[in-house]
Every structure is written in C-alpha cells, then in structure tokens.
Length: 240
Image (cartoon, rainbow, N blue to C red; front, side, top):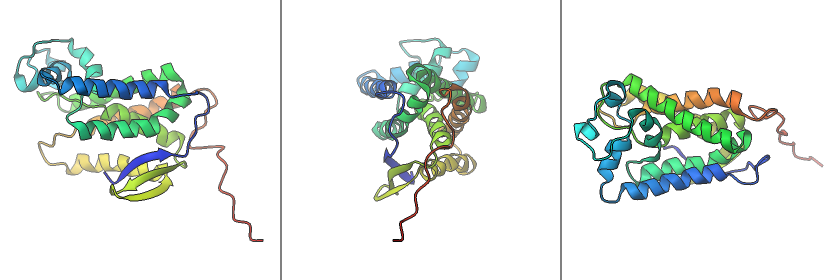
C-alpha cells in the first residue's frame, strides 16, 4: 500500500455525524471478534461467498468442507462483506472507510449510504464470482464495498487534502486524487501482474469501484456537486 490515509480536510455539510459509517465499522469489528473465536472456520465456510456454490447451488463450504450453519447462497453476497482474513485485512479496510466514508455518507444521507455500501459489496462479489465461477475458495472482506466508497469520494472530492503516510512512514498532506488515484490504478495493474493462485480478489475491488463510480452519480443528494465544483481555489500569496 503506497499511501495509508489518516484524515482529510473535509467537514460534514449535511449530517451532524456519520452514524452509518461508524455502525459499519463496529459491525465489521464485532464480526471479526466472533470470527476468531472457536468455530471461526465454520463461519467463513457458511458466510463467505463461494462462487462455485453461488452458481452451482452446492453446499461444499470452505474448500469443499461441510459447515454446520448453512445460509442461502444469495445471502452470502452480503454476509461475506463483514468477514476478514486477519487483523491487517480488517484494519486496512476500516481506516479507508473511516477517513472517506463520512463524506460519502454526507453526500447521500444515512439510508442511501447504507444501500450504496451494500450494493457496492454485492456487485464486487458478483464480479469476482463471474470471473472465477468454479472457485471453491470463499471470498471475504469489505474491500469491494470500501472500493465503492473510494471511487465515490474520488468523484466527489478529488481536490480535498488528505493526511497520509507514504510508504507507511512518510507523513504527507496531498490531494485525494493522488491518494485514491494511486490505489485505484494499483488494482488494475495487479489484475495484469498478479501471479496464479494470488488470494487477493482484485476483480472484486474493480467491480466495487465501478459500482461506486456509477451509483454516486444517481444516489447523491440533489445539488451535491461532483469533482469539488464550487470549492474555492487556493488564493495567491499577497506580494505586498
């Protein structure tokens, strides 16, 4: 990860607090705690999105193993979004959601943002499943949904300054278009160069980004501008 976001210079304009963003982060954290408790592998098998089961209707579970709790395969398009492989997987997704989710929620309102987030995750899961229909490895993680949030923020606020750590150590304050644009470009590059058997679902990220980029055009509040239109330009220094 080239840039790790820390905060942005972007106050809320329409809502007093990002309740849905915080609730989603809390749900992901609670799900992870439950997941790492005894029986976590069964949770992944039951609630992860397995393409071969989604399209074939089999009940194989993780790597073909049976699981104690069976849920409808269509429902796993939602449930997979709240599971994570490890603590770093969880933290990387949640920090992006924390920094950028509030302003996307602000641009839509609470209910629309929740629908937007889940739709991005669903479309991300479908993109992964369509391109790997025979896979028996469960897909887990909020990355697809968060990718939709990233795309929406990039369309709404490319010029807003973001504090981040470059290469995880160097603090910088740079426009969001660089932080998020580099992240987005990396997903496309990795699709081309990722080795066979790579366990990162790059197409899910791309599917989530595509969903977010399209949905923000229709789901934002009336009058919410795109690309920071109306944002005052930086004033030149006074020579006198």
